[in-house]
Length: 402
Image (cartoon, rainbow, N blue to C red; front, side, top):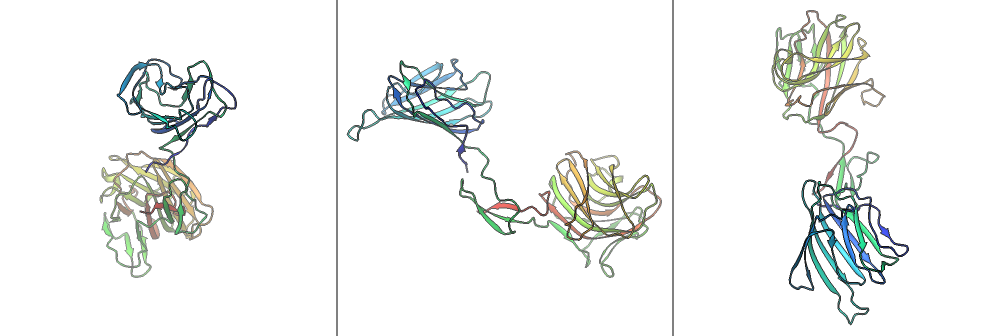
């Protein structure tokens, strides 16, 4: 559906003049130009685009349903030939790289009163700028001995404008909104969870790696994923979708023993396959625990072959402290937010790194993996939630009602 809105600044003459142009148009694919001409003496209107008076216009026209006539290689859009009060409506398709096409209509009143019928002129025109240029100015110009009179007016509408801004987040989830320009109705709701697991039951996570007893889905006792002296084992599960280039992942995490200083261990990743990422060619995004001099969260990615590329944050991880992690992909930005409240309401520690746009195909959730380390560590993870297609779990998603 095309949403029309004012484009540029309407121009109303306060006195006589030979021009009534709109010079501040934003380039649009679809346009309407409206012009009401009043005469002071003899005044005929011709029109230009972008003040371009070179021979780049062609027109076919018919007056009062008469035989078509043509005007080619002209210096303007010749839209009428009568000294009279007139109203012009131009419809224009202006696509970059293409000829600009017009359908124009003109009515002139001929004489005052309902006893005289108005006359009409119909035009099909084109503007062929060289070099190509979008239409950002529409000129209405008098070519006769008189002037346009005071009150003559031009205005423009654009047809591929951004619709009226939808309500933000200061309303309840489930609210409805009607756009006053298009009359479309939208409803707003918090993002839906795409994939989740609270690990309270056996949900078929697959164990892999060697030895595969060092990371387990403990759904019988503590209802969580547990890393016990973890080095090379991992768990994985299909999320049922392939993630887009915007998503949010949340989970709860706590160290029960610190990794050896200088060591790095895979905590969580989303991957394009079921192999361990460091030893395969599959794409992946993940978060690592460890650091050169202290325990840090590190953001990592794999783009096909090769090892992990990682960037270390400055957030120290205290043993025994529960952290609430939020991982956000926004195109080529990969971010970790670390909270201390379970409702993610406190001001988080945040760290962002840049990743290639070619990291794609991510359809598996994975815990652990080959870190390349020989030392060990222990921790647990719980309450995993994945939200695809958004970069915030607290901003409402507005959806058009069909």
